[in-house]
Amino acid sequence: MRTLGDPARLQIVRALADDQERMCNDISKLVGMPNSTCSYHLRLLREAGITRARAAGTQRLISLRRDDLEERFPGLVEVLTR
Image (cartoon, rainbow, N blue to C red; front, side, top):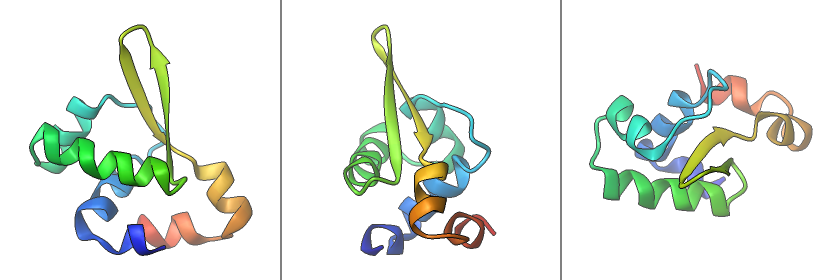
């Protein structure tokens, strides 16, 4: 939960709330932060179990682990994405 307390990471979670897989570059453009900063925050979100990264060739596609979060914390994703 502490990971979600950072405004930048919360902004990333909201950007991923539409359940689309996105590359880091796309996410950084959506939230308006440099790729290196976005990559750092995405790593923290992945390590906390909030996002997942799927390999697609040389790319990593990032998505929100909505089902896992809903199972552990019912209603959390809805509250975060408002």
